[in-house]
Length: 254
Image (tube, rainbow, N blue to C red; front, side, top):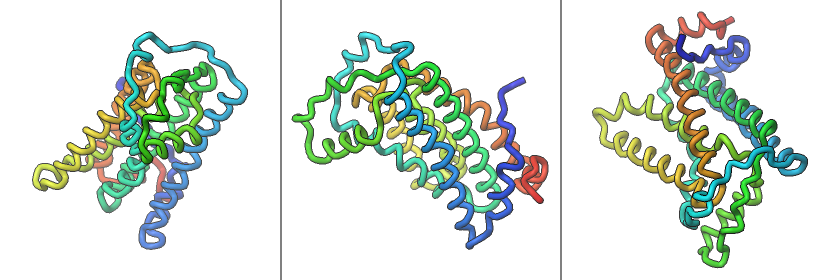
């Protein structure tokens, strides 16, 4: 039997039944809040726990990790991950179908984050590469971004790279939605090209900013692809049976 995400019933009932409150703004607000509580908080909590209390159990570093050069400018595509979240909200289809699919996508993000955070605690690994960075070679904006990342993110939570897991899943979800429009509208085709160029640069940037090992990249892609393979059939089901019937089937309605 193929992998398949089964939507949580009681958990999503509240956001679903309140989705029209405040002219629909309540739904977006709840999704953002859940993202902060169940995605951002676990990451930063485990990152700080590992930094303060844990030690490396298994070191995934190989010689190639230190052979990869630092490219200061790639801190920009690295930091652009944080735009993936609001852009995903903005490009989702209007109406019940987009809302239902967004909740399923959010559930995947929560589950993937929980899985990765468990690994961060059970098999912690320090990313010991920052000594290769030449701070004097940076311009102002590069320096500002590097300082922001280093101040907010300790060099732990190595593998699977959650930076890759999140960006890949969100890129696939946005592509799932936007590809329906891209056939007839040039702007959406340009958007998709820009999205996947950014994802490629982001994937490279986790190595060239010395934020991650090559192993972190490979395992991040693997986790994200498995998660997407489990998510897409559920997204398709929403389109096939209709969001109202889907919501009733999985207990989102009163």
